[in-house]
Amino acid sequence: MRLAPKECAVLELLMRADGAVLSAEHLLEKGWDEHADPFTNAVRLVIHTLRRKLGTPQLVHTATGAGYYLGSR
Image 1: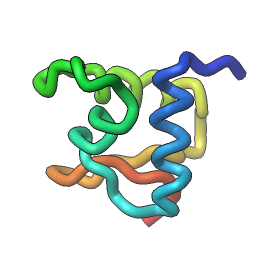
Image 2 (image 1 turned 90 degrees about the horizontal axis):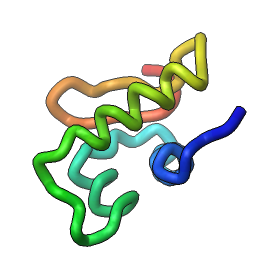
Image 3 (image 1 turned 180 degrees about the horizontal axis):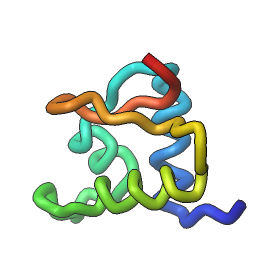
Image 4 (image 1 turned 120 degrees about the horizontal axis):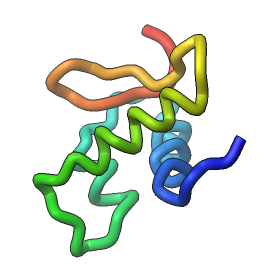
């Protein structure tokens, strides 16, 4: 499977978090450069493409109002 650089960065951050919820702001801060627009949908788009590429069972989950995590809850 081929992943784009941002997809790799977000997946790595989620893997290193070991199941902890990471906010979209945290992912944007760590996965993009300092010039990234804080109001962008970039994180949501990367999460969407990651979910599609990783297939089922779904590995990337949303914690409503908090962020994203990898694994199951």
